[in-house]
Amino acid sequence: MLGRVSTPDTTTSRSLIHHPDFRRLWTGDALGQLGAQLTALVLPIFAVQQLAATEWEMGVLNAAEYAAFLLIGLPAGAWVDRMRKRRVLIVADLVRAAVLATVVVTASTGHATVPLLIVAALVISVATVFFDVSHQSYIPGLVGLDHLVEGNSKLQATASVAQVVGPALGGLLLRVIAAPALIAVTVVTYLVSAFAVGRIQQQETPPHPDTRRPLRVEIAEGLRFVVHEPYLRRIVVCTSLANFAGAVSGAVLVIYVLRTLGLGTAAYGAILSASAVGGLVGAVVAGRLAQWIGEGRIIPLAALVSAPAAALTPLAATSAIPAAPLLITGGAAFGFAVIVYNVAQVSFRQRVCPPPLLGRMNASVRFIVWGSMPIGGLLGGWLGTHLGVLPTLWVSVGLMALAAVPVVLSPLIRMRDLPGAPVVDA
Image (cartoon, rainbow, N blue to C red; front, side, top):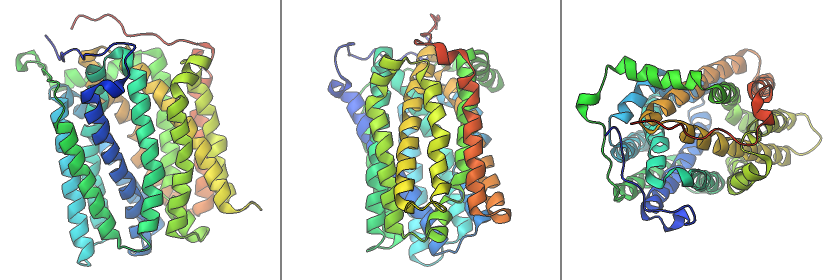
């Protein structure tokens, strides 16, 4: 039997709150998300304020955070399909904790440098590749196909709560404690996350080694499925372009807020938290919106909202309206649209993919949609250096508008329901 997992003891009417193993995964995910948000806040601020990072250095740092998805994204899926996914999740958490502990030590002793942060970000990105591919491939077998939307909605809601709490808490803490102490908190969250996932009782049965084929053959199967599935192909192109655009702006965003607008770290953290409320609302209502509007057409409609929302960020520098309210409004609208979009498209691709291909399919998708981000980060750093921060943000808005085209000009805009999973003999 190829890649089977034990059938979860759930029914279509019983909430996942009553599913013990999902609660353990949910707990670990919540702690990991909180730690990730604290890290995403403090490392760029530390680089800009204390290490005097340039626009180009921030672009490279941004690129390093996602470089592994481009470098090892495809083989990671085939490797994950050969492994016990719970074990991969635990190891990834431990690796991230160890790397951040190293950053804490070097920063506390005055030996931290921008190149060191870049290397740390690169190693963390490798661990994150394996964690994310395993996480998305693990959920269907853990909760069952009937609970996919509920499970993804709960996990997206957790991510949004972390985005609300993490930056606000981190921004306030940075006023009274040093950055290394805040990074140390992240180390603890990853360790506790590994412990929570380690308590999951459900056992996996990985494919027998005799069933394995050459790695390139298995990689090609996952990539071929993504390219040949017509709706998934359009969704992947849209997501890749949108992530590319987001990475362009992300390379200069901290410099824009702290230097161009002159806002402090506490205000920056508060803005990120307030804008994340939109994502939390999106996670809560995503399932109901998909039922009301249709799980097909909700994808292009959510994509259409992204560019106007993103445009409020550069407008904050030239508008008569105070910068903070514009940033909060734009961030809230953008976060709402992204989470609604993600819940719909992630649930679709988990449901439509045959279980033995889940790891390779998710890795192929991540390779395409996240592999564009290091390139976007480098472009953002280059544009910020040669054109300036504000023009770079407007370039990102234009790219975000372009990203919606593949799903808006497609049958998705007229579809209420998306296809279900094919029947496959595993």
